[in-house]
Length: 125
Image 1 (cartoon, helix red, strand yellow):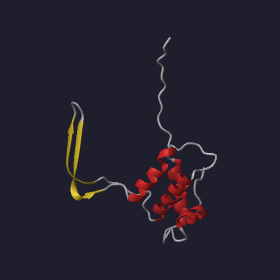
Image 2: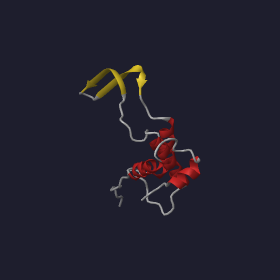
Image 3: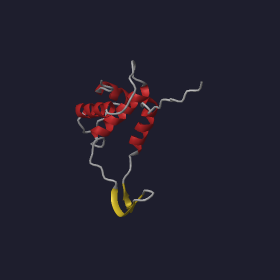
Image 4: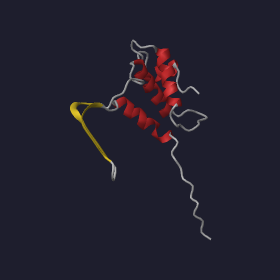
């Protein structure tokens, strides 16, 4: 399933959304990225999902959707086995997190992601 096309991204973000990036590759990457998410099945794709796909394509055009990731430069790390404790401290200014665009995409998709479920096997007679 493809969620976005060059035309739909252009309609959402305007004609210059890809900048100097490859629009075809960007849309291909955005669709692959969306397909990897546990999204519900849609008969009609919701506007929020289309907008999230458009922004994902824009990130892909900039080379920011799929890129090497690092958590930053580690200053110190501590691991404790009993009662499980993990602590990592990063060098100030060298932390890396999600971009504001990626946080926005996550928020747009959140209502449409399949959530885990549990079955209640407790029966009262």
